[in-house]
Image (cartoon, rainbow, N blue to C red; front, side):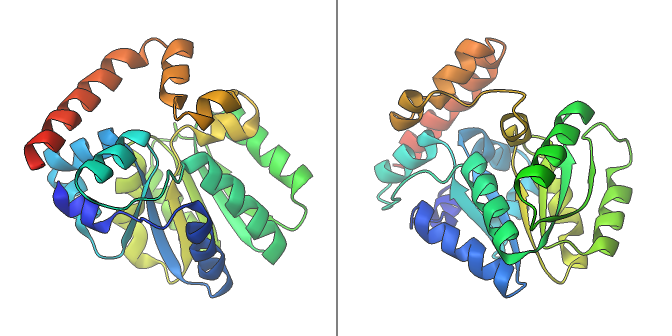
Length: 236
């Protein structure tokens, strides 16, 4: 697992936003994985996902506070979290400013449709090349359509590890584009769900807010985080 931390972006949100800005401007290809403890544990137990995380072209950012704390325990100077929601928010503003394009894939139909409507209303400089909900059966065909459309950014909200593995499977076919697996960000950005109050965000307790709002997350959270903590102690 130490190999994942070796690749972890340490510079903080502002510096990462600059990387996103330059990638869009210069039409570079960038694949971003927003990592929490479950991300790294999945890599440890899934050979294909492990290869994805180890790939030198994959950019891993510390989404979860558990990743930041573990990095500090292992001697890495990770500055702060770089969350998927905030990456999306920044990208939309920057795509609008640069008058570029985006494709949305994932979430329920009503969620992604509401997000697209909101983007068209609030970001007139953005060209939405298309969107598709996350329940379409042939997602490979969707990516073939995306390849033909050549958007400047592709945001995929299918959850870990499906979103990252789908992007990685097709990434080599693209010459440009910022690709990000964004988990539940469409729900928040569309207005269908509220993000945690600022107090929870400030004290890195978004995970607690989500569990309180959705208790079914509790078992999954503790299974991945306890195993992750044991692995970090072993590595340390």
